[in-house]
Length: 166
Image (cartoon, rainbow, N blue to C red; front, side, top):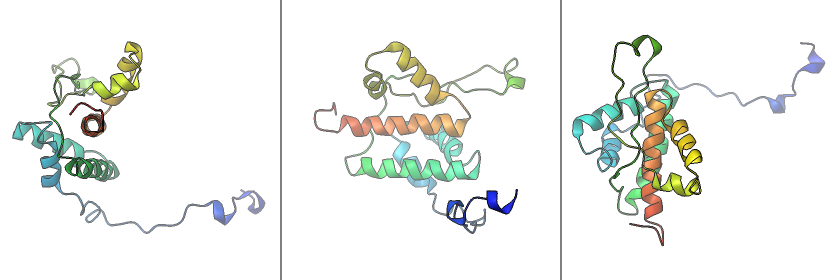
């Protein structure tokens, strides 16, 4: 590209020196995450599986992002008495890679997607609710489970607002 067509320097993102992969997740506290998830996933083995999917699988930036967002929600809930157990909700299907679809029965993750806050957001429109559920539960485990857990924690926060059902 000719020099006169290049973006001016102020349009370039600032250079950041990378953090070595061996240290990038040093802030992640799996035990603390496990504690925030206990009301949502009471079985310890199931919770260990969910924690592994959230912060032990997938691209490293997703693991760190999942922890950061869940930790912020967990702290907000601690300030308001903790998360509420999820009652009911939509099952979260385990999406299998195409080569396994024929040979493995598709199951569900051990945490349900709470629907109260989503129903309110959808304004009672069942098609919008279905679309929201599809968006939140689709994708690899680190995405789908992070979405579901975040919705569960957000729903707990909303239930604790003035006028919300505790």
